Length: 214
Image 1 (cartoon, rainbow, N blue to C red):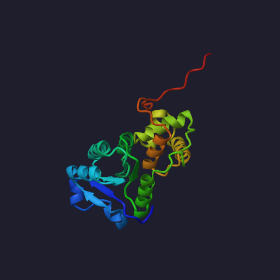
Image 2 (cartoon, rainbow, N blue to C red):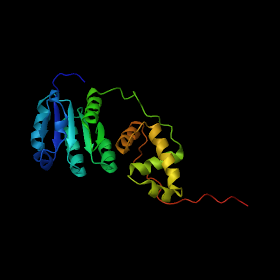
Image 3 (cartoon, helix red, strand yellow):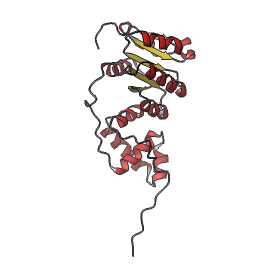
Image 4 (spheres, rainbow, N blue to C red):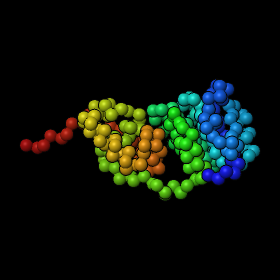
């Protein structure tokens, strides 16, 4: 990312913005960052300038994050949107990606991670670059759907009649194949690879193997 002035808006909840608890201090002055805690003000800024990046940081308020994301998309359909989520909040990450977020970043965040993610979404890199390898086995695909629902290894093991160790092996394989380092990046990479099927619910009961004919 160049050192030229950027137009970045950190859109937060009114409480988060008022308490100065947003990610804005981690962004350099060259971004030309505005912190906004009111949608009426935000929509006016988005409609009237050439900003290229919105950072949604609502302090863990998932429903508010999705509402603001929808409003941003209606006002500026093409702008890059980076959504900050609380650690382990897979549900919000999945919903945000489905609603049009460009990327999600899991808290706690560092300045380096924020800048790298901001650079990625703002530059609009070729989606074919670093494309995840969508070659999961059938079992891995089932485990992935459970992981995207935020379920633990132990829960998945119980549902699939497998040991937690086996599920952990599947999880590591999935993370490796999709080039994911944590749950947030797993959500992002699964969407990029087209592996999220909202119409297909993950298996929710133990299926015993078929009995061989005598």
